[in-house]
Length: 209
Length: 209
Image 1 (spheres, rainbow over the protein chains, first blue to last red):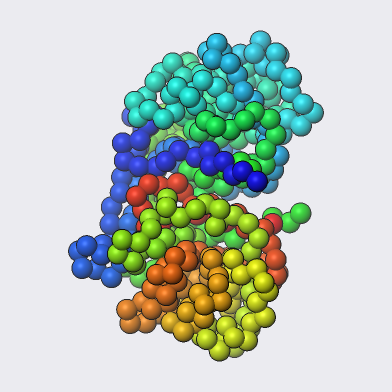
Image 2: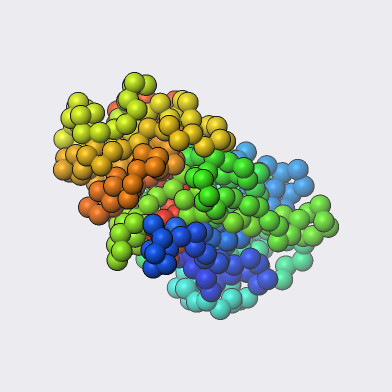
C-alpha cells in the first residue's frame, strides 16, 4: 500500500504567507555543546506549512480547532485534479467536476503542486477558490476541503469571501497540501493537526494511503 | 470504528519536563483587535506533550527525524497494559509479557495514564524503562516503543541508559501517550509528527483505531 506524505517540510526560510510568522529553531540542549542530548524548540505560525483552519480563524464565535470533530480529518477522501488551464476555482469549474456521491472530503490538486508549492518565494498567482466556487462546494454538501497552496483564498480578494463561505458553513480547511505525485481519485486521508487547545488553526502532518 | 485520540492537549502550563521549553501562544492577528482574522503562533519544545524521539536525540550522528521512515509510525500496534504494581519496566517485567509474533510497535500503558499524565505537576515517580528492560525489548525485535509519560527513562537514571539502548538500536520512541480509556491489544496506529526538517524530535498527533 503506497503511503503519500502530502505535508510541506517545515524549516526556516520555507514558503510562507507574506508577513506571517515563520519557523525558527532554537535549542534547549545540544550534544555539541557538551550537554546530555539534542533537544530543540520551535517557533511556528499556526498557519506555517501544511495546516488546518477551524471556523474561528475568520468567524467571530466560530468553532476552535478542538471543537471540530477529529473524525472529519480521517477517512475516505477524493483528490480532484484540475488542469493547468484552471486559474481560479469558480462555480463553473465546480459545476464541471464529476463529484461522486461521497463529497465529505475533497482535496484539490492544481497547478500549484507542480509549479509553486516547492519554491520558497511566495507566488501570488496561485490557484484558489472564488466566493461562488466555495459556495458551490458548500451547496454540494462538502464536509472538508483541501488545497495545494497556503490559502483557499485568491490573493488579494477583498474581505476573504472563500474563507467566509467555507468556515461560515462549518467546513474546515487544509491548506498547504503537497499533492505532487498523488494520483487523482479515492484515498484514505489521515490529517492530524497538533492537539492544541484554544487555537483557530494548527500545523498538521497529512498522509494519504 | 472507535477512534482514540491518545495525544496530550497542548497549552501553556501543561505538564512538562523540568526545565524544558513549554508552550507559549502569541498572535499575528486577532479579530478582537479589529484585524482581519485570528492567526496565532506557538513556541513549543520538540519534546512538549506527545512527541517522537529520533536517534539523534541522544546518539551523536544518529538519524534525524526526517530520516526515520514514516511507515514505522503507521500500522498495527499492540497496547501492552501493565498493572499498577509495576513501578519500573525491567527485564523481568518484559520476560513476563506474552508478546505476540508482531512486535513492531509496542505501546506501554502503565499506571501513568490513570494517575499522572493528566496532572500539570511533574511526578518523578512515573513508570519507565530500566536499561535491561529496554535492552530486552530491543533483543525481542521491537521496532517502535511508546510510553504514557514524558520519558522512557526512569527519572534521574545516570547517563540515560534506556534512551541509549532504544535509540542506539534505531528504535524511535513515542513519549507522552495518553492511553486512558484504550483497551489493551491490537490497534491501528497513526502517529504523525510534524514534518520538521533537521530535528531530533517533534510534537505529534497520535490516534489509535
